[in-house]
Length: 240
Image 1 (tube, rainbow, N blue to C red):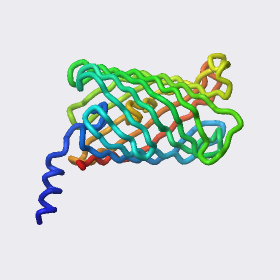
Image 2 (image 1 turned 30 degrees about the vertical axis):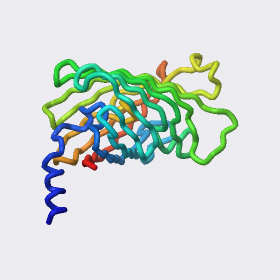
Image 3 (image 1 turned 135 degrees about the vertical axis):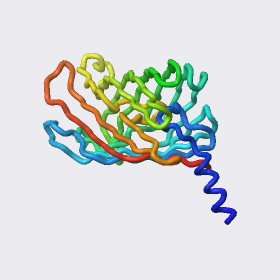
């Protein structure tokens, strides 16, 4: 009975805010999320199966440790005002058509989120990494640079919308990086503190949120076609 009472207190005391409204996890909070759905709809390679999975814990209100793809994030500044993020580690684990393998990013990330009141925030991110196929030795390293800008809208505490624009480029010759045309993305294309922000997130229970990820990618200058992703999932937060 005592254990059940502790669990009930944890549930009732859990935050009612949408998780994506917190730039980093509160200290002593675990977060596990996952999403599934069609990927690369409309691309030359044809549609495939997409997924996203994350697990992290807030060591303190300013320090977050990612578990699924090991990384550490430091946040400075005031929560709900101007916040700055510094991160290093791995992120973006996915099934890559280009490499025909599971890939991940290994590198560093910078981010800024500035709140205008309690309902609107603007965020800017810059990620620099080495793209690595899982379990495959490549002859040359592949470098990736991704810049993003996004707007977060809080529709009350329980519902959040985040729309972002991103530009990304991957090349195996770093000296020719800026001579290669980037890809542009719109939708849920931004990671803040290595956490990918859903296009729409709704808190349905004290510790459970429903997530919708949707985005579109195209080469710049436009050469067609546009590839779409649409994933649905959930985020589960609980105290440790």
